[in-house]
Image (cartoon, rainbow, N blue to C red):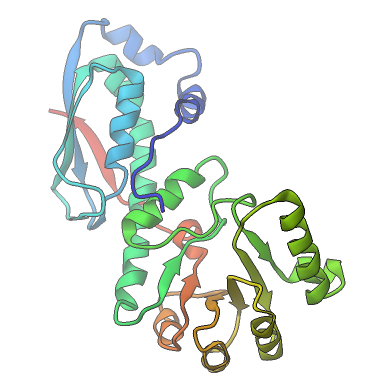
Length: 282
């Protein structure tokens, strides 16, 4: 799970190229290379702060001599008026990094805040909140990092770290058995040890998959709470069960209380409001 990570330099380089291009001509026109300033990040919304560690890495990418002092930590509840961190260094470097740092932190904090809200609602149950691949292209690392900071769990990162057999795979393969047979032949041939998750569309599918004893988890997409309860009874802890499909803040509690093991929510990353933050010279 992505609690603390090292951002690849190539990733930051892509972001910087998009924003700065041939140069920050405004700052270049006004400031010399020796001019220095001090800035701080001011919180303007209530929520869960995320991206402090990411911001520190971005500043160091621009200039290793920039001094970064964190005042709050990733995952902390913040309120308007609080200061998240202070940074001191060459003015041109601070201003070049300003929008990138804000863009990363505002979106990460929005995701962490949304995730924490979901987690708080079901904290009386044993269910875990999972993210999905419904992320912004090129920004998945940060979005899944934010989910972890907010208290959720990371689902597969991409198509390479889990076998997830869904309805389209099953239909195109000619059925559930065919899809599973081909999957396990492939894993054996390639000598891969990947968790196998398969989607069940009916309770009959659930019972059949359980009997096979070949999968890590069963995905129950758009099942009713009544169906989820029956699936839990069928599984009896033999296999992990995951609920998904249009889950929101109004429905999450009842779903978690069915006894389901985990709940994947695309809205964690694709339906969020960014936290309002600002970087100011002081």
